[in-house]
Length: 141
Image (cartoon, rainbow, N blue to C red; front, side):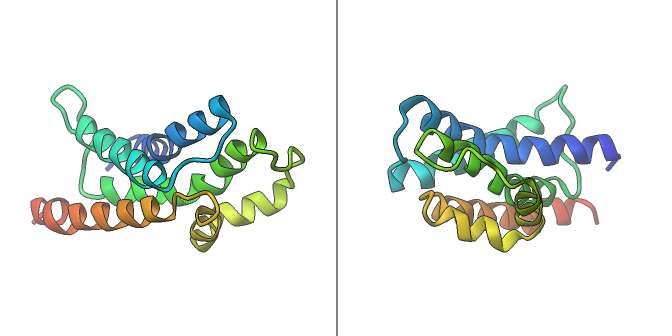
């Protein structure tokens, strides 16, 4: 895959997963329910993956699902921090800590617990790895 497709897949993965939950938190000023935190981000991520492969949008390649998953984990801490600002979270963001948290995937899982998106992250992880093993990897042989 070309680097532009990789970058687009990375941003598409992170944005399609986190943007709906952040928008709900910012608009309503309330925490998500566990059901919404699990189903909504996973569904929008999988929909984005399907749309990326439509004719005329040849974004999908051998590594698309894994690059999208990397976007979910890397963009997670920043997006959750944005969502928490309306919920009474700190508006003073320590950029150094946010950068470190974004580079270490375990922080996305750690922060997703109180954000009630933990099961959504795990569901998306299982789905995208299954897609990669089941279709993307086979199609490259």
